[in-house]
Amino acid sequence: MIKRGIIHVENTEGIIEFARFLVDEGWTIFSANKTEELLRRENVHVEKENALTVNNFYLSDTAALIRKIMTTKDDNPMDFEAKMREENSFSLICMNLIPSMKMEPKPQEISSILLPSNYYISTILRNCVVNYKNLLILTDPADYEEAIIQLRTDNITNEFREYLAAKALNMVSAYDGGISSSVLMSDSLKNGNFMNYLMVPFVKQESYETGSNSQQISCLYKYPSESGAVSSFNRHSGLNADFNVVSDAGWCWEVISFLYNKLRTQYSIDSTNSDGYDFITQCTPLTGTVFTIAVKYKSVIAAGLATNVTDSFKKTCTYDSENITGVTLGCSAVIDETAAQEIIKTNIVSIVAPGFTSEAKDILAQNPNIRLIPIVQTSTTPFDMQLVNGGLLFQTKDNQIFSHWDLKTKIRPSQNVIDELAFGMVIAMSSRTHCGVLIKDNSIVGISQCCKSSVKAIDDVLEDAKELQKRSGEENNPDYIIADALICDTEVPLCDSMKELIRLGVCAIIQTGTEKADDNIIKYCEECGVSLIFTGMTHISY
Image 1 (cartoon, rainbow, N blue to C red):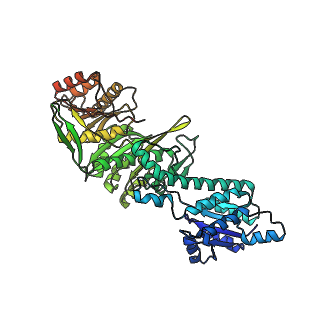
Image 2: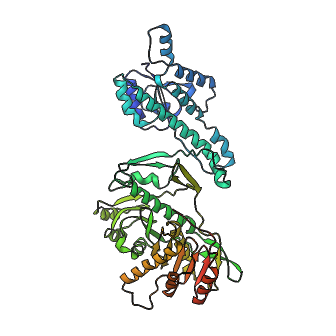
């Protein structure tokens, strides 16, 4: 084999060890730019290759390099022509790129996106694949070890060459896809002119031994250049994460991030009174509050808002405390010692939070089954995807809580209830349709989701709240307030369960609004002194 190789990498993992092996085996290495600097700094002998220089203006050099790569032959017949090829050819190409994608680039950035400084690297790699039968094309550090074994034994198999060539094409297509999508996707999300080919270069992050069930396997892919929750899943403590833990942890953090992105500062809602008067409804900023949420199989089990971590956790466990088992707990603040002392009493499988104090870690370590996942980044991915039979559904995220409030009754909700309605709608948006959410003292006291109809959702959430009332020993207390607010993600007509909830103390209801039963529900709520608000927008989710 011709012992001349090119090393030019953006992902430098393992490259020094691999380069040293090559030099020790008598290889001549050619490189440029940061890779050349790195190798020289580590005292690895390297020759400069002008065709690889950044912002390369020596296009003739690049063309010559590509010709050398494409004419390399591995058979090495003993003749003058073969000798000339050996002196000018390269039989090993170790090159990689890091695919990236920029959402909503500024107009002045488009030119640099379409023509990046390292554009010629993908061109070289693509031409390498044409001659893959005579080249060893390494683009993934995970393949260095096997390459060393096969090089050491002078036995490069055809299967290995094919595998590496396919991985090179995979990298090049991801790189090109990130460039095109950076320009096209930002426009598509604004005007609905979606790309003809969906090319989002998701990057492999971590593999898991199982999927949702033990008979499945799974892998986590990360959005390119994304610094959201997935970047933290391989830095947790406790047992190894699995598919369900990662799914629930990501969902927890997405809900937490959404809540604070929308409600941390002053959130205003255009509103119209029952007499046609327009005004602005304002929610109290959530600055200084702690949000805790319990999730299982991407279903919200419980949630609470308070001024500190411990109280927020206790509020979360107020509702359905018997079923707070096997859940992932998400918290918007650092878990401290006091909160850890409460959490350790429960059967929680993982905790997602910005951090954990050393005292909290010591306490939670008493239960080796709890995974601690520190997350501080917030995802900014503006779209959702869902696999369907033979395809993929793609849509922009549902990221608007309200566009308008239409107050149908004369009584306006109090400020406290306004805040609870906004909090409850975020929970409803994170639940599966049809759903009903009951909020009391900034805590979930009843939740139903994935119901066959909106009426069934109200039936189920009523039973949920009654069960909590029974467990609280307040079953026969005529003054017991079952909840402050009822939140629905779709339209709900007047039904017996809604009447029962109003009788038990619900003072505000918010929903899409119904076409057939508006008059009945408006009249009933007016007579009972209940604030009824129509939003005119659904939050359907699956």
